[in-house]
Length: 219
Image (cartoon, rainbow, N blue to C red; front, side, top):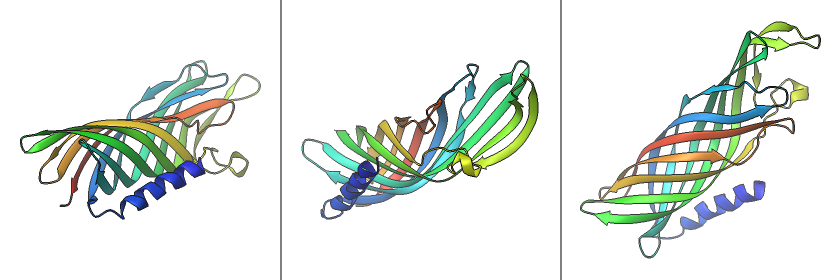
C-alpha cells in the first residue's frame, strides 16, 4: 500500500511540470460512517458523524473534455457506533481519525453556458496522522458479567501499547459529480468508500463518507 501512496504522490508532482495545470484550494465537509464487524458482536448501530477537511487541488487538462484532478487534503473521518456487549448494557464508541488524503481522479466535463458539469472517479490514499477512540458504557467480563468503562485510546497506536491498533494507511475508491463555473469556482458531491480493513483479523473497520466540496481553481 505504501507503493500506491508513493505512486499517487508522484502523479501529483508530475502534473506540476505542465504549464496548463491549474492550481487552487478547497474545503470539504464529510458526513462519515464506518462499515464494521467484530467477533462475537452482531448488534452494531451506526450513525453519521460530521467531519471537515481542506487542501490544495490541481487539475491537468487532457483531450476530449477529460482531465486529471488531484488534491492533497487534511480530512477527518469520524464514526459513532453503539452496541451491547452484554444484554441490556449499551456501549458507545466515538472515533475521530485525522488523515492526509490524496485522491487522484479522472474527470469528464460537459461544457455548458458559463459553466461545466463534471463527473469523476479514482483511487484515494490516506495516511492517518492522529486519531482517538472514546468508549462509554460497559465491557464484558469472562464470567458473563460487565464492568463500566469510560476511557479513550490512541486509534493508531498498537494494542499492546494501550492503543486501538488501527492501521494508518487507508486505500479508498471515490466518485464525485459537480459543477465548475468559468471563473474557476466549483462545487461537488462525492462518496468515499474504504477498501482497506483497518482492523485486525478478528474484525472489520472500513471508513465511508459522503463529501461536499467547495473550491476554486485559479486561472
